[in-house]
Length: 244
Image 1 (cartoon, helix red, strand yellow):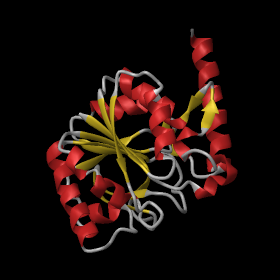
Image 2 (image 1 turned 135 degrees about the vertical axis):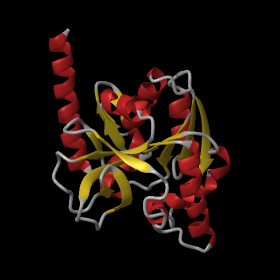
Image 3 (image 1 turned 90 degrees about the horizontal axis):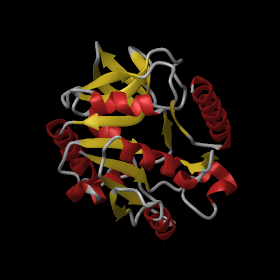
Image 4 (image 1 turned 120 degrees about the horizontal axis):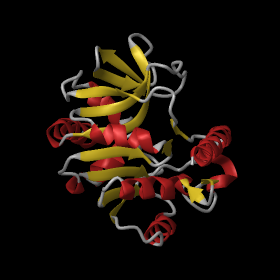
């Protein structure tokens, strides 16, 4: 299994925090950044290969990740049109590297190790969702038919659960989605979410909901998100120390 980590975004909502490096290199406390935490967790989970899409600050990100010294071979794929495209085009640029079972995640996603283990242990293709959390106004929701995911997007509220872009995808299911991504990109629809292509399959990719409940699994889009996640991570660390 490979990990695909999408790090081509501009991070403009983070203000000055992304002036000199990509958003994934934002510090989240404890000497960690978003990406260092992700990569260390992947290594502990036994993942040995990752594909990372890049944009601005490509060289900064390469040097930083390679400098972590992890037992993880990372293939970097530049999105040269990151200024004008969404991550659907980043995936298209990396498509030749993705002929495997896949763990797909956004590079600004912070999650507990138990969430990662649960997704990886799933016997079916799955996406991390939470039926326990309120539906967000401006973030992803997954439309569910039982446990099967029919659609993913911002504007869905009926029969939906809060969702995060963390997927475990079997090769045969991922290939169906990737073919749609290629169709979208080759007809010029490069400014949309990759999930827009998934939605055309209407559940046909056999992706199911994996419910992470109230455990930490969220994206950092702005400084307010960063403050909330940093606080939650500090609390989790205290609880872990107390348990020892």
